[in-house]
Length: 147
Ligand SMILES: CC(C)(COP(=O)(O)OP(=O)(O)OC[C@H]1O[C@@H](n2cnc3c(N)ncnc32)[C@H](O)[C@@H]1OP(=O)(O)O)[C@@H](O)C(=O)NCCC(=O)NCCS
Image (cartoon, rainbow, N blue to C red):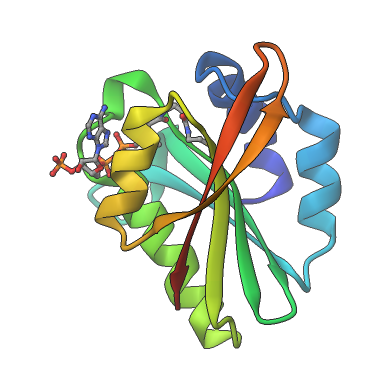
């Protein structure tokens, strides 16, 4: 992900029902280059050059030997094609390369699609944070895996 991707990243975020970070928050994450892992998925044309719109993105951060996955979202029309999984596997692989030993994330208790994706990627339930989310208020399921 680069600065130039942020308008589309924010558009996907807004369309995906995530807790909104907005342009400024993604921008300031991106600028802390040493400990953030942020990627976009996009089409390549036949010459392997970027083309078309961004299909999805992931934002994560390295904190000591832990990888925290903050946001992952895929445009509605590109879902169930393996893009979310590819994004998640990319940050786990890159996190491992950079010394992560564990990966963590929080997910809304009602977000079954995301929980299924995380389960497919080796995460399992590690706890519950009561009333973690607002608007609407909801518990977070904490999920983790070894890296
Ligand atoms: C969650 C999300 C990122 C998944 O992205 P995706 O690209 O569709 O996921 P993938 O195609 O890589 O799915 C991988 C596996 O996850 C599981 N999965 C993904 N979406 C699912 C759904 N809607 N229902 C059940 N299982 C699902 C399946 O096991 C799937 O493998 P399969 O298609 O071979 O059965 C996408 O639905 C999304 O953007 N949701 C809105 C934003 C969000 O909730 N983000 C997570 C919280 S930060």
